[in-house]
Amino acid sequence: MHSVPRHVSATAETCLGTECTRYEECFVTRMRQRAAESDIVIVNHHLLCADAAVRQNAFGEVIPACSHAILDEAHQIEDVATQYFGFSVSTYRIEDMARDIERLGLKETQKSVDTLRDTGHAFFTELTYAHRGGDRPRNEERVRATPTSLSNASDAAALLSGALDVVEATLALLSKDPESPGQQGDVSDKSAEQIAGLVRRAGELRTDLRFLLRGGDSEYVYFVEFRGRGVFLRASPIDVSAIVRDLLLDKMRTTVLTSATLTVDGGFGYIKDRLGIRSADEIKLASEFNFERQAVLYLPRQMPDPRSPEFAVAAGKQVIEILRRTHGRAFVLFTSYATLRAVQGIAEMALDYPIFVQGTLPRTQLLKQFRETPHSVLLATSSFWQGVDVVGEALSCVIIDKLPFASPGDPITAARIDSIRARGGEPFDEYQVPLAILALQQGLGRLIRHRRDRGVLAVLDPRIRTKGYGRRFLASIPPAPVVYDLDAVSTFMAADLV
Figure 1 (tube, helix red, strand yellow):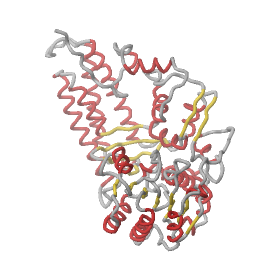
Figure 2 (tube, one colour; figure 1 turned 180 degrees about the vertical axis):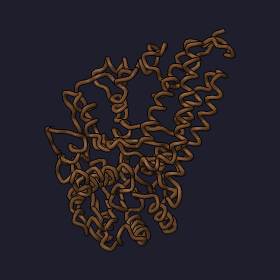
Figure 3 (cartoon, one colour; figure 1 turned 60 degrees about the horizontal axis):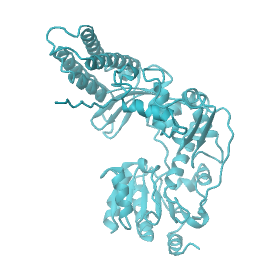
Figure 4 (tube, one colour; figure 1 turned 135 degrees about the vertical axis):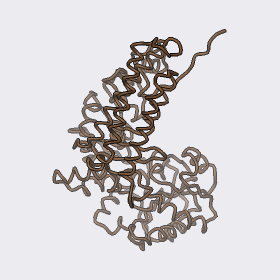
């Protein structure tokens, strides 16, 4: 009888890297070896940042070292780097560790695991109460943390830190004495490796927790994030320019940054500043699409201020009228779920077109159904503003409700605004407007994906016409003819592209 090997997936925390006895046969190692033998390696931004983040630990590297890199969709680098080069402790991280210890099947660890779970639950309960109590809106996902707010959970944090000490000590003792009384058989080499990994994880978790609880490093913004049933205490770098420059750009002899949405106000100054690029050769190429013939930009004349209670109803009426002229076949992109829900209620009563809504199905399924269903309409928020490609008549209209300014209440956005203001800059002009321009370019870019595509771009936010900064948006988006009434939309949709 042949035993069947037990396959266990490895995460960044559980993988032992070169210390693992199965390192050479691991599929990740083999993929690295294949990559090292290749002339060209294609990875996404997340893997690129993951590689930069782990190069000094046991892994050594995720992808092979290279001297030339092409970063497509380079406008996303700042956000991805912000995610990777920070600190985080969460309910999931505590539970994953407790579960991995239990999988060892060693009864000596059960008491320490129970204590870890109990103290973890108590800590995150206190953290939640301190940052989501009182009259805070229940749908708030991220709340900025301060040394004062974090001090409310300091006693519970001390107990959790102590529980991690006990876990680390218990596991370390077992690794030194694999045949201690009460264990069910000898600890195998594989179990010894797992115990060593868990000892390391306990120490890292405790170190991260202590850093986060201090909340005092001025280069980081601290916040508590609520996502589903998970609670996360995080610290993210406020400025990633030095990190990107030191760990990514300066490692290369040549780096090419490319994207359809890299320029603001006709130049690359914004992206260079955000990514710490001191000097670069620059080229801006004209689009291959003829927007003057393939699209029109509709800006309704009579719309209330987007911050007023009347905006959602007015937006709903505009959406209905536009979709009647385009016969559905549209993305309607929102900056908030609240407006999406309001417009959804109005549109579902007034239109017979199939309406798909983000959140009802996984993204890939929604897009598949949209493509396959004639005259359908998709209502969605930020995750559909980029990386979505629908070619042909299935998508003949993109409607955007508001200029996509990042919420100043978001902890990372707020910290970056504060940082710019502290150095004497003007955060609205230097950061908030350029960031919104790039987001709007991405959203409107969903429409024309082929030289034979045609359709209507619509921005319902009146500020693009009435505010001084609106000219910056108009100068940065596709150069389609601007129309202000629905009859012009009808005329365009009825005309054949010559």
